[in-house]
Amino acid sequence: MEDEENSMALNFQSIRGQKRHDSRPPVQDMLLKQPRRYRTTARIGCAVMLLLIGAMIVQRIWAFQMRQPMNTTEKDSVSKETAINGTENKSDLEKSASWFQRFFCQPLNIRLKVNSTHKLCPQDWFFYEDKCYWISKEKGSWKKSKEDCTARSSQMLVMQKQKDMVNIGQASFIQCVNEEMQLLWIGLQAMLPEQKWTWVNGSPLDDKQSQELGPVETNSCGMLNGTEIISEACSTVATWVCETDTLNKDNI
Image 1 (cartoon, rainbow, N blue to C red):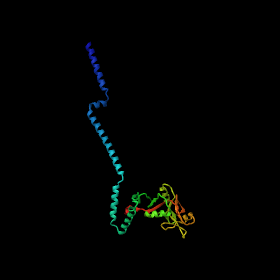
Image 2: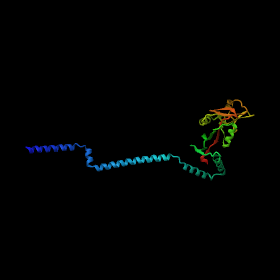
Image 3: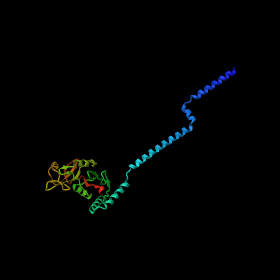
Image 4: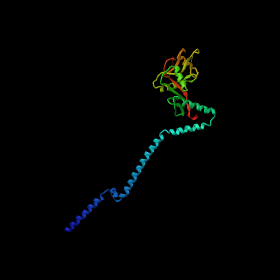
């Protein structure tokens, strides 16, 4: 009787242990049976992730370097273009030499800057419609303003876009870059005894604008007030605007 009870107890414990073993999750059992293969797979996955992260970092560094200005390449390009133009005729060489003297050899030690259209303007000058513009910081009479522009190998601002039209767009641009929004001397002067308003380049002011300025008086000069031209005594002190042609980089 005791032997039968002991046998039944052993069978019960065996069945209970088997059920406990079978209750393990399949994944856990798989990992226990093949731990080395899955550890290797995990290591390979981590290595691939590290390589991808490293590749992204290298790509960002390369993109950043590509955005940096390539000053050395630009300088080499200008030198090569200058060398090629050395084979052109004498008049072209003289023209280029004149431009370089104008922009590089002045006492102000003016340097060039290039805009997106490959037009060259001196430093501190503004580019607009194939022209370079400069606004003075100091004030002076109309005569002093004219002399200063001439010393800069330029002329006072001429706003005559066409024969019978004042360049309003040009006036708007000048006022946009005029930081202190002051009245500005321009290259317009009353000529006597002709009784006409004349630009410094010799062209007359259009009839409509002349009528708006009123009768021509002695010692009267043109001044820019916003986008309008007004008449003022030439002895009045004010800032002024100079303009000059741009230098085309492709023609150097």
